[in-house]
Image 1 (cartoon, rainbow, N blue to C red):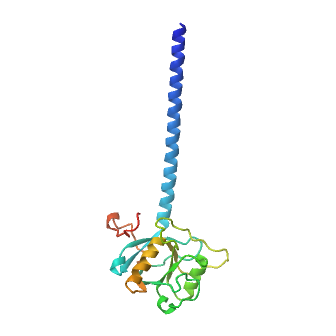
Image 2 (cartoon, rainbow, N blue to C red):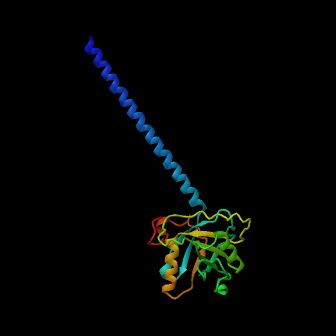
Image 3 (spheres, one colour):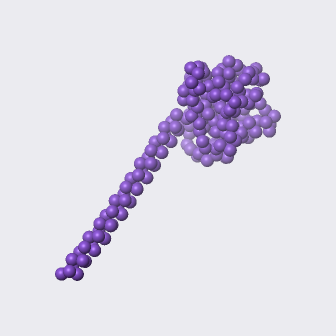
Length: 209
């Protein structure tokens, strides 16, 4: 009788352990599912907010690029800009009056992050008659971290679109233009990528989307 009691007790302990382990696994699985869904929802939200542009010329830079619009300043694109110039700011930081202001007028400007606030860069570009501002990260190795560009709490605003570009993209665009002795690329911005199959998007070979 005692042996039977011990056997039942052992069986109960094993059964309890199995249940505890199973509950632990289920809890871990539910936690992972929650984190995965949260991350997916966040990624979907950002992807929905992000916009895209394509370089038409030069041929060596003919790719589709992803941008993150500024959150607290600037405007949205009223209509797509087709075959417009993407001109490098001189100086590239875009914090002061540009040397090449005539080339910037009625075009999109590419500016590097740093030296002043994102908002100040946008306002300075707007003064020169620029249609939109693309601010690239000053870290040329940044190939996946998008910055949420905020205002600088100076109670100013900028009345043209502004968006953030990965540092790796900005570096490769600038290097590609300088290699060909060009001061601008020809772009279409923004473009609708939802109607284009993923395998037909010509993505930059240096990035993993």
